[in-house]
Picture 1 (cartoon, rainbow, N blue to C red):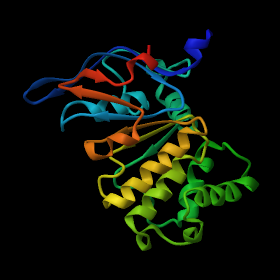
Picture 2 (cartoon, rainbow, N blue to C red; picture 1 turned 135 degrees about the vertical axis):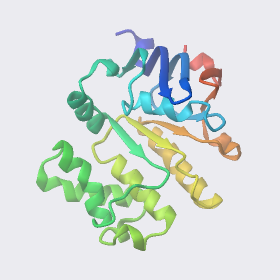
Picture 3 (spheres, rainbow, N blue to C red; picture 1 turned 45 degrees about the vertical axis):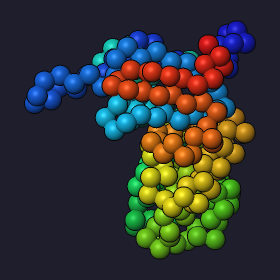
Length: 237
């Protein structure tokens, strides 16, 4: 692997994604090719229905392209079987949802430990200690034994980020992670994502909130399923 290739985490080559609807075939992504570097905070922007969430899902292995190639850290993601894909995703991708998706019957600590239990990624004796350390990292260690319903939206999003980090994945993806937060809390969450890139994580966020654009080193703009602009393109070639 040459030095230039080693800087790239994700390569998409000629990605197309179609959905068959009652009204016909919908082309969500049209011949998308991208290179995404390691250790960056990147925003995917575009209007509703532009294809940004579909693009994020394909990068994360949550969906497969109709055709084209998805290479993430030298793994050909679209060729993995469903079982292999689930295992790969559990260890390599941390997912943060807009509505947090914390399990209501588990404490915050138990929610963060869950991915470690699912992937058996750390010895059982170490999982609680690691979960507490992650909650400390996102500054809600004092909420560890509480249930999600007792936390504010910002605290729940921090818990969701801690859970996404549980298996120490190189890639974090987030679909509108600040959409349900007030402006100050949203800024705090984006600062936290930025800090994660300083430890080598690649963080990709779908957002339509242009007022936060200054927090992103790279922005991928998508319209009608096509990439129309990539900022700092020279870093991606």
